[in-house]
Image (cartoon, rainbow, N blue to C red; front, side, top):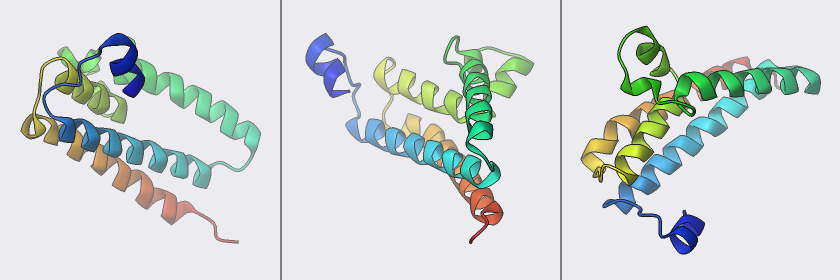
Amino acid sequence: FTVGVALFKMPLGSSPLALVLLTLALALASASLGMLLGALIHTSKQADQVGMVLGFVLMVLGGTLYPLFRGEGLMAVISRLTPNAWGIEGYMGILSDNWGLAQAWPNILALLAFAAVFFTIAVWRFKYE
């Protein structure tokens, strides 16, 4: 964000608090997903393969290439099952549509819910040695 503002005069929306909270929630969900993968995968080769496939699937379904979550039908519903969609929609809302914290709360809470689910499963599946 600093580079975007400094070099490209990128607007950060009207609510810096919403931007910070969304970013922290997305980072927590991402870290928890990484912990989940670490708890489920046994070798570095599996991690490479699963990480690559999961990255592409989340990229496509989550709306990184095209915002499926803004559409209608089955693909919009499936897109909402990814943390990417909630994060991207939140950033689009805050940065482009001037959402405040009240409008960003559903996205922040959804990302925190993803983080809680991923973390809970990771702790449950982790093998302490």
